[in-house]
Length: 338
Ligand code: ATP
Image (cartoon, rainbow, N blue to C red; front, side, top):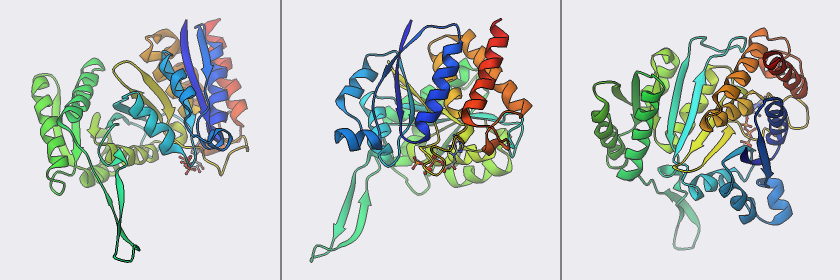
């Protein structure tokens, strides 16, 4: 029996979470849910987007499923990542059949540093003598410890998952000290794997182009916080949109799983939300818990529904609602478990 913290959050976060819990309930695996509040609605109600009570729930469970937060996303998810030292953000980019992917042969993963870089949130206004704002500064923090930790994670991930190459992405030609240190850390770690895993590095601008011109050549990408955020949305575009990209935030002792998409206020309440990204995030959670059989069953079920393309949401070219697609996935699970 695993204890899972469930934070549905705002907008379609709640809709895709309902769908995901529904499919998880069809699997023969025992999960006990502890629900927590977080996000815009929670802030309106309790004055805080991430109350201590929610943090306590997450800290005493085995893993956390998170839906999405709207305007308060930074206060919620960035803080949760930092509070629990969830240093590695994994974003697999995979082509699924029947999904209008620009490329049908992609299977790489972006490993993003999750705790520092430009996202430390240290910003300041620059004011003139009258006190009027004339500019703003942001601090980028890079430590050798965090850079080596994320690069080690990427190489270990490559080794465990039979990946052949790790690409380090940075902007060390301009950000000579911060990104320079990241690049140096990357090669320090690569040295330990030189007989088994290929290492290469690119500037982020070149990577953005290569992701469009030859994305199939990537295997594992390891990069800094800001660049990882941007490149993973580019990756989502390559394989059919945000509705399909899951993510995992992994720490030494805890982990949180969430779709890459946000609360999507434009489609909230319209029954249009594609539950795939949240369900794939739950599959990553099952793998993290070593529930590989359950993960495999769920993965097969969702692949079947996607490849048939009949009962899928509008973003995938279908005309089914979130719950119709969910029922189709549950039926596939039942068929496998018979
Ligand atoms: P937020 O402010 O919470 O980040 P957003 O709308 O700015 O929300 P996303 O939620 O990440 O950003 O998504 C951008 C757009 O992609 C949405 O407006 C929506 O149209 C589409 N989209 C995102 N996720 C899904 C999904 N699961 N199913 C269908 N469409 C989606």
